[in-house]
Length: 335
Image (cartoon, rainbow, N blue to C red):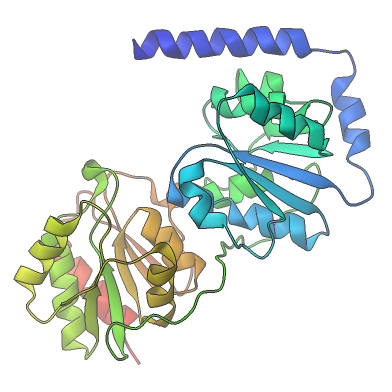
């Protein structure tokens, strides 16, 4: 059934592209991008916290260039971007005609499809095309999504970084800086224990890329040895993971249930955050907390943030993952 659904989406995208085709469309679109400040709509309609945070470099880039930035996002991740200082308005995506009609009525100058750059993301491409109306629509050049774009954007060479590639989608309008950095709104202080402390977050959406709780307990023990109190945070349904870490490291402190803003505030005050490759990793990096991210079965270059003060540790196939984790904690808590 999944295969048939995928084929149906591909055929639908090809049919839409044929209906929308006009000779000279790209040249006219590029001309319309020249000069002046634009009203821009970014389209990212999945419900993942990390994906929303990975869009913030693009938001900051466009706003910094003087453009007015709107974002169409899944209602479940509105909490990630709401209150962002560089977002003029958030729009909740629902697959309804009235939503797309309201967006077309806004007559944005530019719509950016922030879908996947390496494989097709048909839903995102179709939504961007329908929401854009007369707007110039930018997006990944992959098949068949690129056929729906006025200006399909080929991936930037020399990097597979998701944040960099997503920011590059606006390159026909504005030049991306290097390095690319994420951001998050200001938060009020939220204290659990006195400093110095570290955030240890053993959770993650997908089990196959989640490091076992024992590694986080070892990280917590190494933090205690360095005089840093490990505060173990968790999300809905992750109580058993926290129990496992605290049971193996009695000195660890179990955090109360936290909102996204409270978690961000905790991270802002932390000496380091230790986590899986998941939404909290992107949040920790976005708020500027030194982050030790433990990777398993995922591409570090694409999804990680391998620049100081962060450290991305790939444990896939590691000969001694326990020693690797403890040594990384020691290095990140020196001084």
